[in-house]
Amino acid sequence: MSDLDLLQRRFDRERAARKEAEMLLEQKSREVYETNCQLRDLAEQNTAIVESAAEGILTYSSDGKILTINRSAERLFGVSRSNSLNLRDLFEAGENAEAVLFRCDVDLGGEADHNIDSQPDADSNEIVAVRSSGKVFLSGISVSCTTHCKQKMFTVLVRDLSRRKRMEAKLNQAQKMESIGQLAAGIAHEINTPIQFVNDNLQFLQDAFEDLSELLDLFDQLLASVKADEPANKLVEQIDSQSEVADLPFLKEEFPNAFSQTLEGIQRVAKIVVAMKEFSQPPSEGKSQLDINQAIENALTIAASQFRDVATVKTDLQQGLPGIVCLGAQINQVLLNILANASEALAEQCGDTKGEILVTTRMIDNDLEIRVEDNGPGIPEHIRDRIFEPFFTTKEVGKGTGQGLAFVYDIVVNRHDGSIQAVASPSGGTTFVIHIPVPKVMDTEKREYENSIG
Image 1: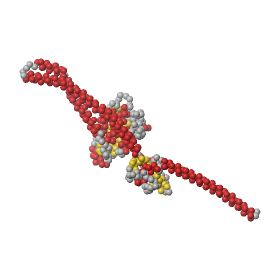
Image 2 (image 1 turned 180 degrees about the horizontal axis):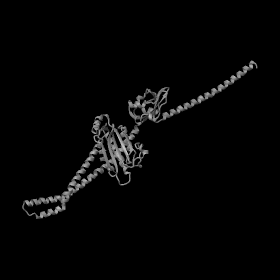
Image 3 (image 1 turned 90 degrees about the vertical axis):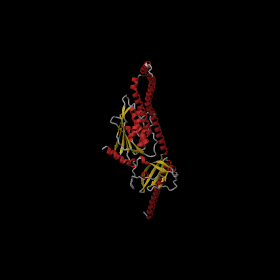
Image 4 (image 1 turned 135 degrees about the vertical axis):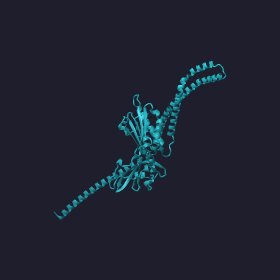
């Protein structure tokens, strides 16, 4: 084979290889183009999703510089992505805000921990946000953290809770009005009963006085006749006859009872009025000291009509307990709701035998404990953890809003840093256990209490 033939063969191989390379390059270029189109479509899709989201979505660096912001967040805060923004300008400063917004359970180059248990609790995710106008609003946020180029990057979802809070306030007000309506009916009954027998006794005393008045007139006439040395036989006969009409032995026996019952009725009404006066004091702007035992006694007085026919109420209130600093009107509402819940549970039981409600107070470590125990049907274990959820109710439609215990939970846990749980009673019913912390300012009183018990 000549050199020319060898050169031609080599040229053909190189031309075939070049053609194959060109085809491979064209194929790879097409794949790159298609991948880029897919990436562009995916980016546009992701952008459209983020931009159309109802929640505000922001990403920011560990120094608070906002990297991206969607349209909902722009509208929510009244800002523009064209301006240089910092997250700290959008939320009120505070340890809680910093802890929530810049918490990141991830090491550089590692994977973020997105488990819900690693996040701050739900309550701390409600923080005050600030619009560009300076107007503040309560926001609910959810923060996640990841890394990009070995730098921490945060994503926050922001929701305006103003409307929800207004609705909750309306529901709470509706719950209060429902309770007030029930209380008003109960108090009317409570006052009407003693007023009724006061009225009956006064009517009896009025009728008796009319008979005695005639008898006294005859005695006056007899006295005048005796002074004038006039015959009095006829007057004596009239007095004897009128004494039989008046039934003096009966009056002598019944007058003390009538006066005693009347005084008892007046004292009962006075007790109800005092309890109502303490219960109806307008809420103060801040917390104040409350005698929890007296508050329980007042609640039992006011709510007596709700459980009188279905339960016998016993109390075991530890004396000398330190006062608690709280929103008194709200704690009063908690007591009424829990007592109403117990009486309603007992009312569901069949039979003529009354149930029992036991209310106890104790000092447990640094908490004041209130227990309300009933021997009713109890709460099934599978729903016991749900009874404090808003709108959850086991009652028939129209007989319950499902807001009572949710309202109680909000007051005890969110507004007083306490705790409440429902546990099974030894008697088979339910015991509500409430713990309210005794603040440090009450340490002196707490020590006095501890000294008094041993």
